[in-house]
Structures are given as structure tokens and as C-alpha cells.
Length: 549
Image 1 (cartoon, one colour):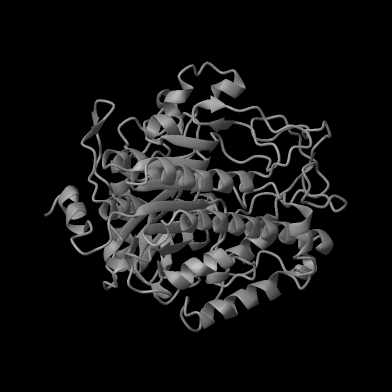
Image 2 (spheres, rainbow, N blue to C red; image 1 turned 120 degrees about the horizontal axis):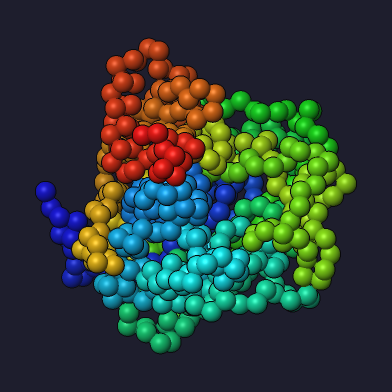
């Protein structure tokens, strides 16, 4: 079998082909599969539509179900547990759950930088416990786990996860923590991420035009809290007054028109009908704000694409867009109960000293800086149209991700839909292949583990889809996909394994486990072997001295 390096070099551009491209990898946060217009959404996303029209749309691409694990997998080409982030950024005592990228897990930035790429990042990092600068915890070496220590020459963004769009904490430029935005400052985090990314493109074109660039852009939109400029929200006024089912049905119709899903699809059932949802005016406003956040992100992506065009680099730039997990169903249930802020990501006061109002309250509409709300389970269901469940879970609603790919100089086809099954672990071998890079043999004095994925480059060029075997585990929710078959379980409710044939039943409505016991047994054995290999522990994970195994 050819080594990963030989495969990468064989795929690198040859004489007469495009030179090594710039690479721009764009990640959305908590974006549902159907939210953007290429996947059936009504939200105005003309720049993402342009990527789909001028490139490729993948309809069977997967993430790792939650923000931190997905980011760890994307950055390393490994499953999250192998990368040290099997859960979130908390140390549970086991190597797979340290909450920091494993020292031996080389990142995309490190691999591409070794191959001669300039590297930069803008946005949310969230693969480290290294926030001691802000919390006062004894983490004196926090900078050793920040982006600059993991291969990025330039960085602007936040070290931790979600937060206010008007005053995010843990802001950093390169290795220097920044003061929070002040009262009255014209600041909206989505705009700042896009602005920093565009500035990195233009800076690179001035200083190192002879070298290719790898730029990783990790937006926090549309992760809660629901906060967006009033003028953007106003453009969606009344758009969601028809309720959950009307929006979902319109999305399904557009998905069918684009050939994204099979005929006769049975959609996942609604968690609650519009008629029983509390406070319809609030429900409509919540989705209006969410849509405004997505549109604002799309506008920022347009700013980044414009920077590539202004510098003459757009033609030979590979742009990829995806989401870290399915839509988020957190919040929106505890009506009348107001939470309390004062944590690293949940401030208690606004920049000008007003108390922030938390929780779903009918008299408090989302959008402004002093309101902190989520849009709840019913709209998350709509965002994931037509799939089951949400972020955290490994049913299709939690792990299906949009993936758009555009590379004018390297992809001969435009506007095509690809059936190739893919996963975040495939990004490392894919980007290494187009860059002519190979894996690092060691990092921090330790051997680097082999990448888990396969290059998607053959599918860029129209090759027939290859069957895959892929695995998931998050908070005890588990799955394995083998070809078109998927074995999956929820941790809650007994954790019984369910079996689905995704070619006919991508919404996981017809459980075939009772009819296919031998297949269930064989696929379960596959998953258990994988879980042991990557270090999965029973959920909830206990420290080693308390673990019964």
C-alpha cells in the first residue's frame, strides 16, 4: 500500500496544472444542514450560493457532533479522542479526554507550514484548557496550547468557546490578550473575524506573494446568544410568522428541487407543533435574529472572497465551507426563569453596565447586547431539516454538515452535487494532497499517529464514490456507518442500538435492528474495537482512580 506521503505527492499538481493553491477553510458554529440557501434554506446567503454554483456541494459529509471534538478532528485528521478532546475542554484524567490537543497530534497548520505554506487563523479556537490568563487558574503555560504554538503564524480571535457578539472574552491577537471592546465601540464579532481574515489575505499578498497561504476562519455564528444588529433583524420581520412546519416544508421542497434527498422521504417528527409553542411572537423573533446572524456571516464570507479577488488570488484558491455540528436545541424551554451570568463566556453585565437578561421570557425579545437567549428545540429541528435530533447526538441531525468546495483552477466541474461520504478526518489528507504535503513523523518528541481519513481529491475530479466506514462517540451517544448502513444509539433512554439503511432512509425513521440481528452484532463489534483503539471511556467519564474498568 502506498504511504500517505506518496499518495499526497502523487496528487500534487503536475506540470501544466495549477500551482499549489491557497487554502481557505471556513467553519460555521451550530449551523443546521438546511439553513443556508444551497441546502434549501430561505436565509439570504448569496456568497455561499456562489460557492455552490461555482464549485461542489456534498450531501453526505459528517462532523463530530459538538464544537470542541469537531475542531480537534478538523485540525488533526484524527478522531477527537485520539486528538485529546473526546469531550470538551475539561480534563477528565484520561488521554482521550484531556481537553487540550494531544502533543503528538500535528495540526493542519503545522503540516502545511512544513510544506512551505504561510498560515493564519481568525475566529474561535476552543481546543484547549489554556484560559488561565482570564480565570486566574494556575495555567502558566497557557500560550503553549494557543494557535501560534500549533502552527499558525498569525491569529486573531477567541481562545474559548461561545460568548457575546458585542463583547467577547478571551480575545487575542497573535499571542497578546486584548482588552474587551469598550462601551460605544463599533464591534460585532462576526464582522471582526471576517475583517481579520481578509486582512491576513491582503497582508500575505504584500509580504509573501510567492508562497501559498493556509487560512482557517472559524466563525462563532450562529451559536447562541441570539444577538444581531437591528437593521439585519428587520429584513426578516414576519418571515417566520407562519410557524415551524411551514418553514420546514418549504425547505424540503427546495431540497427536492435540487436533488439533495431521495423521493418519498419521511421527515423526522416535530418535537412540538406551532399551535402548542409558547409565545409565537417570541418564537418568530428568535428565528429572525438567527437568520440575521447567518446572513451577517455570509456577508463576512463575501468580504473574504473579495480580498482574494482584490489580490488576484481567487482563481487558484481552494475554499471550503462547513459546520462543526448540527443545529443546537439547547435552551428555549424554561419560560420565565432567568439565568445568571458571570462566567468566562457568560458576562453578567453589558459593556455599559446594564444587567444582561438570560433565559426565554415572552416580554424580552432576542437580538440586543443585553439579552442572552437561544432559539430552542423546534427551530433547531427546522434548521436540521429533514433529519433527526441535534448537536450532542450522533443521529443525522447532530452530525450531517453542509460542505461546499470551490477551486476554479483545480476543479473542472461547477455546480455539481457529490455523493461521496466524507468526514472531518478527511480534511487533513485532502488538504495535504492538494498542497503536496505529507504527514509529520513526530511532534514534541513523540511519533505522530497516522491520519484516519481519506483524501477527497478524487471526488473533486469526479471519481465514483467510495464506500466508507466511519465512527462516532460523544457523551455516550455512539454510531458507526459502514457503506450505507448505520448503527446508532442514544446514551439516554437505555442506549439501545438502532439500525438504518441510509440510502433509502436518511432520516432514520425505520429501525431495522430487529430484522438484521447479525448485521447489528457485526457492526457493534466494529464500533467496540474502534472505541477501544481510540480511548473511548463509558459516559459519564470518571477520573482514573474512580473508573471501574
